[in-house]
Amino acid sequence: MTSAHTANPREVPAQRQTTEGEAGQHAGTLEPVRALLHAEGFTTTLTRPNPSPSGRPLPEELNVTDGHGWELAKVAVGAHSRHYLVTLPPQGNKLFMVRPEDIGDIPRLIRSPVIAGPA
Image (cartoon, rainbow, N blue to C red; front, side):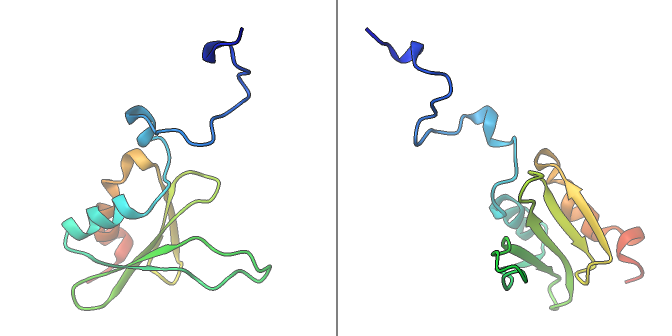
């Protein structure tokens, strides 16, 4: 007789609910960052870059602009790092890895005069 508690520990159910404790453990989507940036007054556009030269699709990016259309940053989810990758300015001069539990730092990072330079 087999019970669910004695099942092979390597078997993983096909679908399983994410518990509240697991929800903040890794960056899986840009939606929380998009909502936060909108609440902070930024404008965002979700884009999917062209595939890499090897043909692999690249992850979605969130283009962050001010209210006047000036591009301020790009945000993506790291494929293996489980962090948010923030590129400032958007041309790629500075790259920051932000842990999912620290997403509140992203608007401050974008607004930082030390990083962004003179207004």
